[in-house]
Length: 235
Image 1 (tube, rainbow, N blue to C red):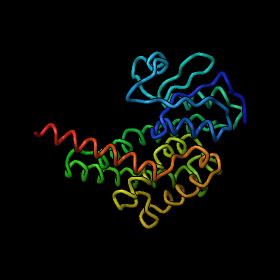
Image 2: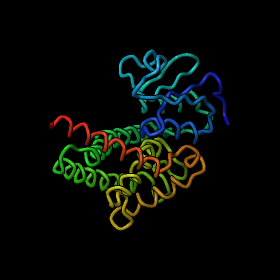
Image 3: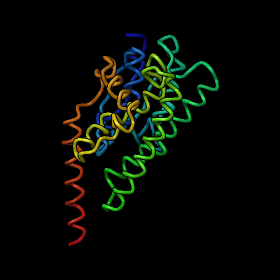
Image 4: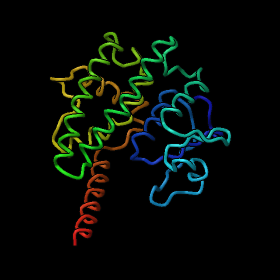
């Protein structure tokens, strides 16, 4: 693997989609690092000291200096380890387009997916599902424009947008298993369906992608705990 080693440390949590983005970026670029799993119910002093503002994962510590927020971290990795293959395009306009779609994934798709999965009422979940479908349809068009007939948003090789979207791929699969839906549908969104298969099959992606079955178990435990809490509150 490329440089990094002992001076590069990632504070993360295995089920976090935003932490997975960073792991994907590091793996695709072939950068070695120390992985430090975090218990978000009992946050470590290192996490609290490294990210005192948000107190969240992921945090990348490079040479003793913390970098926070997944999109910022990925761009930092791409700049510092530029010799390991770029994630962001070289062309300024194409870089701006990639950043736009990464922000869209955060602002629209991830929020809608969370609402569809964890909404407090069936109406809220239904609205989240509607918003998610709209976001996925928009991304299908974005992929068509960005990939220019190739496999990824980044072209022949996965790039910045692929990594950002790839961070939620395992959770998308888990929600599909739980809800019986197909988010990246081969009929309605064939490009995204093919993208998901191509991205998920990459060796660098398989190396860090969490097990879908484990995510389903994790999600069911969260749902059970939330239901028990709601029942206690009602009594």
